[in-house]
Image (tube, rainbow, N blue to C red):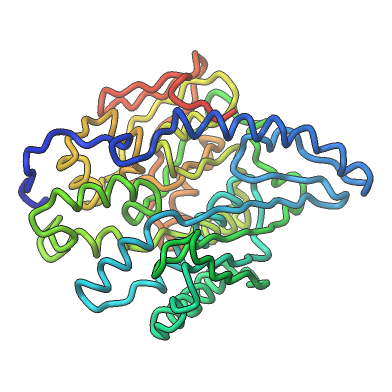
Length: 375
């Protein structure tokens, strides 16, 4: 049962009003990708070569001979501000969960290319040395970081903990993670070269907002009568719901490979919401016939921000945190494998011949090719 509406009738709240404008951010990403591509030749001097198709994907892949190496760096973003606000309101520390969120941002991107995560590095940039005086918070960050590494069977190699007074706001911390992985055997690489009509779309459940859309979620809190303490469902407060840690999908992708399931392509559903299902550069129609249940916090955000289905699903994960594209004959088993890993999954749709677009039939939604410009 969802919570009753608590809208203050301040009008719809868009992601742009919350300070995030992808039409300004994405062109810089594209320009950076094009400049970076010009550096690929340096690898030849070491006897290696890039996998060019990995440019524009969630992780960069290098052919080093007997196997591929994949790498990624990701920052957490503003979810720490929710954790800090909830500590002030309730006295409860959420930094163990925040650590998992940070690692998930990197690892969940890395595994989209078929990589097994090997090493994670930490970047914890505080607004001053005094941030580390809160021993409960610092210890929770360390413990949560190690627990997430253990869950994914990845080594924590080290990191950097600068105190950046004047760059990072006093009392705050900017968290990021870098991850290196191995694609071995090489045939495990999943950059979409085998994706084609007839493939099934399998969606893996999210735990809530994960770590994307927090700028919108924080802005919305300012409108709510009780802020982060507003109930989104009976017994579930808004702030607590926002801080549910991001699911780590590496155990699922590892289990799928071990079970003989061959993923043709994968997408981490983060910023841009379900538009990420259009990430593959090819021209295919993606038809979704089954939509996962929406977590209460995302249903609440969409309702209270005045979002229609198009804006909600084009911004937030709406219950689907990760998408897998695979042979239809293996999709049902993939759902069972994910379930054994503790992650709900659905055979949600199929890849078809047609123009590049995403059709979400139960919601009457369509996103065309121009809805996602990441290359």
